[in-house]
Image 1: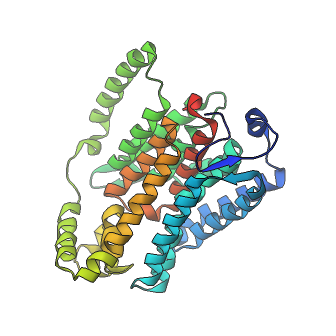
Image 2: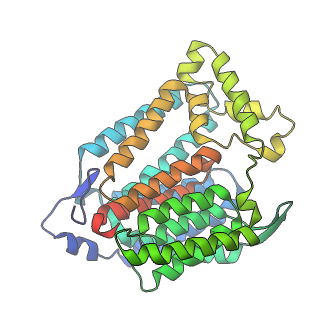
Length: 361
């Protein structure tokens, strides 16, 4: 498929695909976007929804500038209906209003990022990458844990890796390599696995040299990680399995109404707060299960339908599919829905890859 087309949103007008990709964002858009992104990043430490709302609102406002140049396809219509249905289930279900708003905002991050990548293209990288790199350089540090030193903010580095995977700048492989090293140094297993899934979409397996160099690199990196990063190879689940089993029993013992419509948004944290280990564990660490527990079978069905729509929309580009699958993977053992900056980075990267076509992925 040619650049500038997808089953979600296609461009309309007399310009060719090459001309559309060469279009530059106005300087005010780039500067304003960097300011908004920077403000949202520096608000992360304050907690709450402010950081994510600023980022989300900024990109939604930016998308409004491109509405006239985009012809929406059936994929976007179906995806919008699924998302609206899931938001409706959340809004009408039980739970505190602030918790509902928080979850809805989190749910919007990935699809908004995907639309940004599809509508704006690679130019959106000028809004995200510079300030994200600056923030990580200034705020990243090693932290001592009972399992050794670990670099913080693995998911921001993972989002940066996703953005670098669609960069075509000179020396972009060095940038990808630097972010990959940072992810490894975080010793966060799920982040490393997600990076590898993303990497599968970047590699051209049809080349013999890829297999030769790749095999040597995998063995070398694996051996170095085994010696220097032992936490990556530990098999403990940090207590996750015990919590998942408890919540599974709770869900099964719930009423038919609760099984179909859920226990309500925020119920997971409310129940977990009664555990003695809540302070150290914090949350359920499984977004897929959380959606089932809090929104029931109806909400979980719409949740997975939404994933199906996004994957189907970018199916023509392996890299875009792998980026989305890597996000799905992180949600199996982490609270990825809370990582809004990571989600929007991955959405943008997947959208850019889908926009440019399979010859780039």
